[in-house]
Length: 166
Image (cartoon, rainbow, N blue to C red; front, side, top):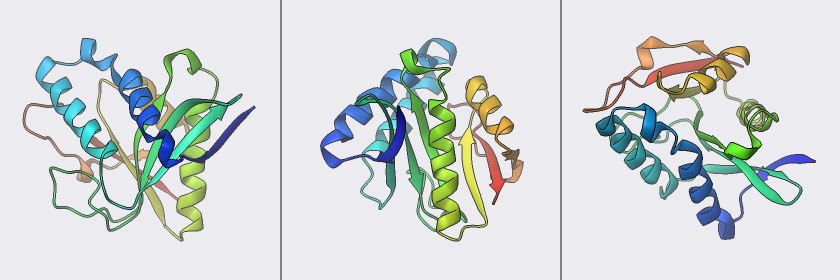
């Protein structure tokens, strides 16, 4: 049975390993410089000292997915001084062997639930064109493009903003 819950501090290393494994497919899809930038961004987000929610999906005692939920007014991206106007979903990761089983959708729904409970008016996220499967999931769940939130770190793909009105 799939459940979502807060990650325990003792699980942070396992979550980091799962996230890197889930994102490693992009190393073969993206330009090497873009992948290097993404990998650095992943490492920075996973090691942040900011107060974020680290959420996991567990199936039969095994962690099969994870996501980070950054609260509003926090610096969600290490290379930018900009503070998010709304909660920001980051680094949705599903173990390759668990894909197609609703894990990603369950994690996004948990982020939506938590954002609503915090009184947020919307939930934001960023993704890039290499992440087509994720983009389809987000759009199916009601997220809409927010091009005004796009950014382009040097040497990487354009990072596209999305928002979900709550």
